[in-house]
Length: 123
Image 1 (spheres, rainbow, N blue to C red):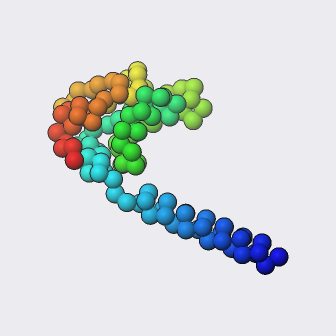
Image 2 (spheres, rainbow, N blue to C red):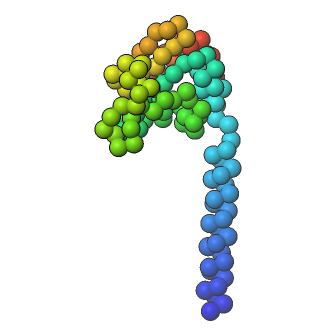
Image 3 (cartoon, rainbow, N blue to C red):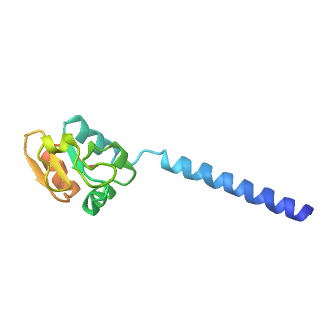
């Protein structure tokens, strides 16, 4: 019984250590945090839908900085309709980006393209 208790305590200790480590890693700033914040500060908007694979690819370019993107969800939770904000902006494809110069571009954009259109510097 003592051996089982020690093993259980060891597993619990390792699990807690792993959770602390994962939390520490995820809370560290990413190299693209400043870039994502700049996009938002410049008034860039990223319209997408949770079910859109191209939108997921676009977000993946930013890694953990994704949470800082100026993202606007266009889909209703059931994925069957578009929200009013996107209907009013006449969003027809995802992702669609709007830039400070009032232009827009649809499709997956490279970080370099986003930098050029927004005047935000890449790290």
